[in-house]
Length: 293
Ligand SMILES: [Zn+2]
Image (cartoon, rainbow, N blue to C red; front, side, top):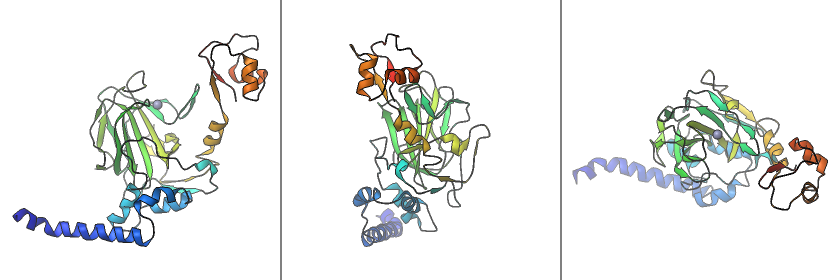
């Protein structure tokens, strides 16, 4: 009973703040439930403004941790940033959340971009099993569980600017979902779980579901941010989206021939040969992955 009395003022403050927040969201016509639907109708800059913490009190800041908040699905329903004409002014850190910490100080072993027939949405940093992996910025853990899509043990963190960072193939978790974490907090131990051929940290940076080349943000040699802000647009950061979607691969099945594939994908045998560095007389194998566009 004494405890209750002692904590009453805190509880009261919480209740008042929560109700005030509820009132504010209702008053502006965006309840948390409706936000996901409405998000699609907003321009990325409007969303960025929603997400960027201002001088507003902490309970307003929580808005960035409500839309699309999902502890069970890795990826958000992306807002297609290759379709936007906006330039998104992204601030990686600001005066309220000024810290950056290297997720891990390791050599970049694999870069962002095409890797054979798959797109690699992050960078691979060399580490040893059991090495500590750190939160890059302040934020909240959205996802911390085993992922069957190839990430293995994966932590996804959302930050105060709406950006999310992914830490994959971990051998152990050091955080739970919905936990608030500061930049530099140990969030897991490195490993090789999931689709991985040896211990490494697969690290991604995403905004509204769209992957960003981490090397555009972080200088992995010096261990520092490349700049405090980045202007992101379809001409720069998200240019790859269009190129990526223009490509198309086909896994060869029994009985298929180059000319059949050319007809099916509205291209020519010569074009397919050029894309794959093969000759039209070459025999294609079942299971072979051919680029067709
Ligand atoms: Zn990787």
